[in-house]
Length: 499
Image (tube, rainbow, N blue to C red; front, side):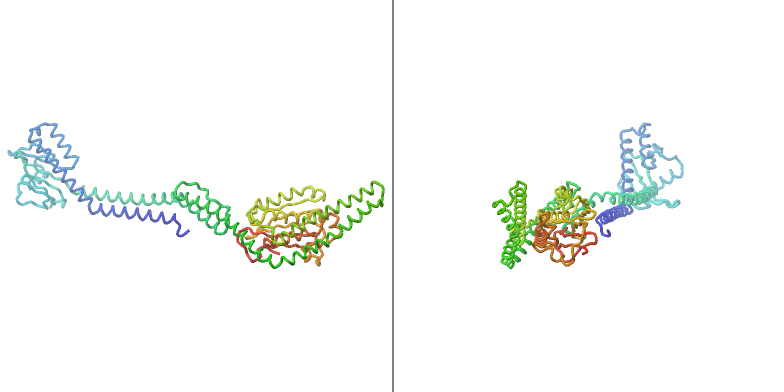
């Protein structure tokens, strides 16, 4: 990412390090030599005090004291010579009579004509910065008298100070470059610790924007980012609940609007359908009951057959009434749709398991093809009714190789469930009427297993209460029924799966 936080952190750190090192280099270049000179001045004055005190208490003649002073002068790179009023050398770190010895005392004999730049001057000594005309080298020189009247001269070359300052600045440059490279690398490396949970939160927010609430923040940090992640998790759960409530409220509103116009027509249609469908089984029950009463057949086997017919027809009537009541509730809108998010794959597995006995009786084999999970938004109980109706319908009509195939297909923001059974295709002229109440393609076969033509009408009512698509596809070797559900909470007007 071009403007990633990781890049910005690294760039800011490197820029800050460059600024600090540049400032230090400028300060060193401008003031380090002056600092060294000031420090050397203090060394000269300190050496003066030590020798003056030694002369005052008479300890300068001690070999131990002279060695200590000579060692101090050597460690501070100071040349020192002390002579008494009789021109006798008391202490010297240079050879008597040498050119350096004579050069050092030249200024002492010309005190009124002090060469160089005077840095400090008192009645007893002069401290100045001089240049050697022969070697063009700069020195710090100090000369004068002690309290006992002895003469002295000291000097220290400034060239070594400049060389030390230059080496220090050069070392600082190398150290700064290494620090920039190493520091930039470490910041780039450690910034992952900060940016990784931020990227996780970015992906989580993107999923929430797409109304996918499966992902959660899992880094588990205890800092401000961790608190933000926990808030994201709570917000995700709350949004999921809120969207479920909104879906339910929106669906209820649509049903209320549609219910008002359809209510009276549906009542009349319901009464007509009930009277039509109950007429045949009631007539059968009445006829067989009258036969039993009049003793048409006196043998026990015939009476048992009559009773079985009456019980079978009563059972079919009972099932039909229950289905009609369910359908009536759906079409009248009195049965609330409880929208929630659930795994339709797990639901279908449960339906297949509960129909295992029917599958075995039909001698069929069921293939279930789906991913591990497929979450949808719908009423879970009513979705189970749709799946169960499709599956039992397939079991009752499976033929040929006795194969039933159930599929769950994900496409964009939709999930399609298909139930295919091998056998004869449905006549094309009957396809548009399949969803009508009490319509039966094969009336003899339907009555054989107790069907009443209401199951697909229930599917139609449920899917329309969901405002989702459903249908049937004919194939040469069988029939496939299908329906769709939302994989996301938002509704779409476009078809997302092929017809």
